[in-house]
Length: 178
Image (cartoon, rainbow, N blue to C red):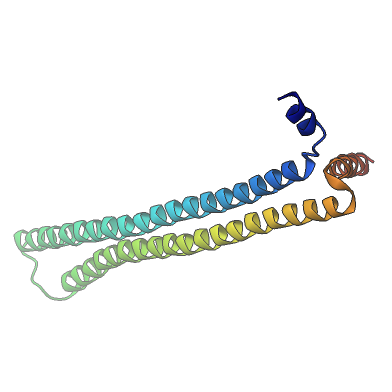
């Protein structure tokens, strides 16, 4: 048992640890890329839901305005009939102008809802684009980390690579502070 511990004590664990570190970096990059896409999908689904909700609310508002317009025009008609005014001349023009204005309000409600829905759909597409870019960037970053770590191992082992990494960080820190 004692001989095996002595043999183990002389073993260089640096390559094994470097391989483990590289594996963890790749796993971290994969997890980060999955998280980016999960977040993007959730935001896309929320934006699509908001678009549908906007269209439903716009339809309800348009129907309410049209119903109100019908009631308003009926009230104008009753007021005109009780006052003894005939349906000619300025009274007819007034009714036509009132109907036109009320219809314009209903159409504006629909257009506003459609515009909001279109913006939400565009937001959903943009969120997915950003998610795909973040996924690619995290995988690329993990690949560069592993590649850089491998190159430093080839140049002088794990101990040397850690020293170089610490040295490069301190140099970049000093450069940033200057």
